[in-house]
Every structure is written in C-alpha cells, then in structure tokens.
Image 1 (cartoon, one colour):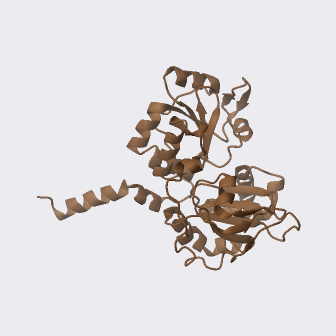
Image 2 (cartoon, one colour):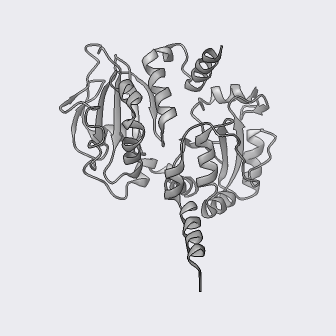
Image 3 (cartoon, rainbow, N blue to C red):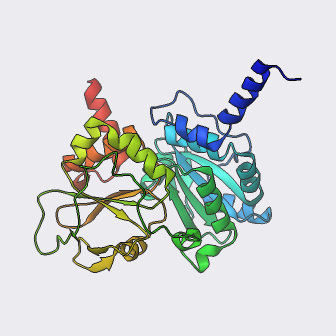
Length: 336
C-alpha cells in the first residue's frame, strides 16, 4: 500500500508535467541556458540543402527556428511544446528543425544562394520576435510562420496544418475555427478601466488621432486571455502605459460593429478575419494615422508586453522597425 508521502510525490510529478502547470509557471524573465533537443538537425545552414535532405527523407519540410540566448519564450517552446512526447515524435517524423540565432554570426545560405550572417538573415526574414518558426515545404516554398510561443494544443494544430497541407485551401484561422465563442468571458472584472466603451469608431483616415491605438482581440472561454488580464494587465506600470493609448477590447468572433482605423465599416469577426488573426489574445497596434505598427499574436507576458508598449509610445519604430534591436539598444544605454 502506498504511503501518504509517496502519493503526494506522485501528485506533484503529475502536476509538474501537465501543460496547465507549465503555463502557470512560465514567466518571461531571461533564462540562464536553453538546451535544444538532440534530435534537432545539425545543419550547415544551407536552406536549399536542408530542404533537399528533408525531401529525400520523405518529410513534409523544414522548420527554421529563429531564437536567441536567454529567450524565455524560446525556452517555453522547447520545454512545453518540443518537450511534449507526442509533439516531439510528430515533429521528428515530418520535419527537420534547424536553429538560428538572430544575433549569431554563422553563415547562412539562402534559397537564392546568397550568404549572410544569421543576424542579417534574421533581419531579411523579419524574424525579430523570438521564437519565430518558418515552415518550408519540400518545393522550397515558405508556407507558414509562427511568431512567439503557443501552448501545446495550438502548436500541435499548427504542425498538422502544415503536414496536411491545409494552407493550400484555408487560412490557419479557418482551420482552427471548429467552434466560435459569441461573448467575452468575464475578463473586464480585473481590468475594467483600461478599455474604451462602444461604439467603436476608430477611423483615423480623415483626421489624425492624438494617441496610438491598441486593439485587444479575445474570445470567450479563453485561458490565455484570462491569464493576460489576471497577470500582466493587472500590473500598475502596464496599466499606466496602456492609458496612453486609445485601447479597446473586441471579441474576435462577434458581430460587434466597428469602424476600422482605415474607415471601413465591419464586424469584429470580419475585421479579425481580414487581419488574419487566429490566436486569442492578439494585440494589434496602430499609429495616429491608422497604420498598423505592430502585433502580438502569441502568448505575451509582463516583460515583453511592457517593452513593446514602451517601444510604440517612444515613436522609435519609425527609425528602428526591429523591436528586438531597439530593446538591446535600450538595455545597453541603461548600463552605460
């Protein structure tokens, strides 16, 4: 018969290795070390060569994994997604995974035969929010991209979407849309004063606004939305930053009427579809003239959101379009 302490130990182990526990413990403070799985490909970083080898191995293609040292989101992807036995087995069967450092100096050979450093290649590919995963099929086509960390179930869906070649007939948003929520679950209880009330007349095409615009797209029964409100958006310093935007909250599956920043009359669901949104929550930022500046369409926590809010409010995106490069400059200046 099991003793009480043995039972407790078993329960703790079960909790530690469940996705829910992993999500609860995930913060975006820099990590000391990231250990990649041994089954990731040891590549010469010649993209065409990698794709040819994947084709010969009868795989679906290649995943280029853009990361950087100490990236908490990269570490979460490694541990929670690639650390999931089902995901690891499925990925190994259908893809070769090649890791690139967005600040690295190794030589990468692009599909056109051009040689660049990892850093320059990442800039060319606009892979500045880590992790960024680029999916190539065996015919040298970039067919899908993920920016940031996604929970295991969403990540598994992305892998299947590519393997099944669903991208040929539908967007990822449509692939995921098996059920639609028609309301936002009780999220405003935690952050009631951050968002403007309807009607949502966001037109900036006729008159420039005095603040940038932040649109938070959510859906009902959304665990990651609730985590955002209960955690990051409840922080006083974040709320002070959000207060410097015109901020609204929309149910991405609702028929709520919206006049978009470009002056179009749409429903929230149609606008989200036109923007190609598939993850909740997604935050889309627009400048005072209604141009999209930036979007966060993956899991976001305190450090990253606070940094991106400051980046947009600074206006520096007009001179430095790469957020990660801007962040490094800010950190360097702070230590000088």
